[in-house]
Image (cartoon, rainbow, N blue to C red; front, side, top):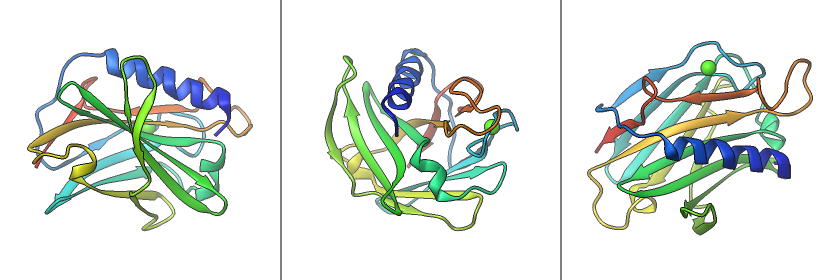
Length: 178
Ligand SMILES: [Ca+2]
C-alpha cells in the first residue's frame, strides 16, 4: 500500500471512529450497493462465529484478483467497548497478508499481530477468520465492526475519492453478538 493510500485509510478510519451509534444485530449479512468504481466495490459483508473463532466474509460486486490488494486494501475496524482494533488486508510478495493492531486515540498502532486466517473461496469473495482473543483477551460477548475498501491502481476513472467503499448498517456500526 502506498504511503498516500495508507494515510487516506487512516483518515477514513478516524472519520469512522468519530461516528456515534451502534446497530443491534445477531449473525447476519449486510448488503451494500453497486456504488464505487473499481474492483473493491463491496456487495455484501457477513459476520459469523464458531466457538472462539469469528469470521467475516466480504463479497465484491465483480470478480477481483488478489493482486489488486497490492495497491489497494481492505480494512475492518472492530470496536470493542471504547477500544478499536484495525485489521488491514493487503497482498504482498504473492500472498494475502492481514495485520490487526490496536489504534490509539492519537492514531498510532500497537499490539499488532498477523495471526489472521485469510482465504478466497471464489473470485468474488474474501474470507477472514480470527480468534476472538485478538479482539479482547477476556471472554467477548459482542463487538461492532465496519469495513472500508480502497483501490488506487490507476484504473481508468479510479481515484482515491471514487474507489473508496464502506460497509456499515444504516450509517451505524454493525453489532456482532457472540
Ligand atoms: Ca458497494
